[in-house]
Amino acid sequence: MSTVHKSGTFDLGDRSVSRLGYGAMQLAGPGVFGSPKDPEAALAVLREAVASGVNHIDTSDFYGPHVTNQLIRKALHPYPGDLVIVTKIGARRGADGSWRAAFSPKELTEAVHDNLRNLGLEALDVVNLRSMFGVHGPAEGSIEGPLSVLAELQRQGLVRHIGLSNVTPAQIAEGRRICEIICVQNHYNLAHRADDALIDELARHGVAYVPFFPLGGFTPLQSSILFDVARRLGATPMQVALAWLLRRAPNVLLIPGTASITHLRENLTVAELDLPDDAVIALDGIGTHSEAA
Ligand SMILES: NC(=O)c1ccc[n+]([C@@H]2O[C@H](COP(=O)([O-])OP(=O)(O)OC[C@H]3O[C@@H](n4cnc5c(N)ncnc54)[C@H](OP(=O)(O)O)[C@@H]3O)[C@@H](O)[C@H]2O)c1
Image (cartoon, rainbow, N blue to C red; front, side):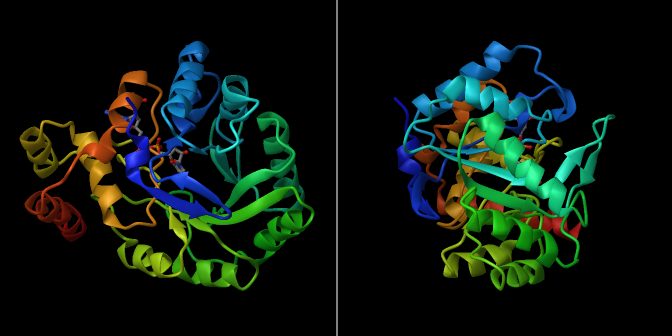
């Protein structure tokens, strides 16, 4: 039986979601480009996630591009009433699969319409503006222009809620002066802890923090401490990494990505995994060590 509900809930805008969700990026082809080798397997992963109680799916129309959203629509439309699909705009793919900024008013507006069409929706639940000042990590630069375009699309009723991704605290503060920001999606996991203070500040404001690469992304987490704790608890290292994130703060929402139904099942049980205090202390040390390194 699924235990997703044991992860607790958090209000994402006006909708309550389980803290344990699913990230759909891995469903596209290699390098998040093109179609998957086995589209039926991808559809099965999506259906099982939702059947297990997941009601928060993270996606983007630039995964594929278009492929991931089309899979979500095929697998799940008409969508269950409690499902919140969070997408992101601000990037586009080059013909070679590269990731490029797409911040012009025309590109942002087209991206919202692409998401609506490919997901089969009349309004998008949540749209994150993905900053591209740095492709691989947050970099300073004003988001006023692109965020104002997104806020206008929200006023037109095409977007219900707005979030930010790959951003600095200064950009979040700038964003808040333009519109309500309900979530922040940045790179964070056991070993990559640059946003520790930010998470706690957002928690004080009731803003969700959604770590991307919760398992290390394209470079899966590797740590002897993590492996030792997992062995002691009879869990996998990835389950321990997710359980640690769930415990990290109540506003942390998980969107682990997988194209494997076996991994999905493992990931969706982590709310049941109790981390003893000494294990948490040991795991907390991983980030400190890697930052020192
Ligand atoms: N805003 C942004 O800029 C941004 C950037 C990247 C990602 N994202 C979002 O964040 C979500 C999560 O990130 P992600 O998918 O890139 O990285 P991730 O969740 O950290 O890791 C995914 C990788 O871990 C593997 N994995 C998953 N569960 C596992 C398990 N139980 N045991 C062993 N390996 C496991 C997956 O391989 P298998 O497929 O073989 O399981 C995949 O290679 C994405 O789906 C996407 O929605 C956002």
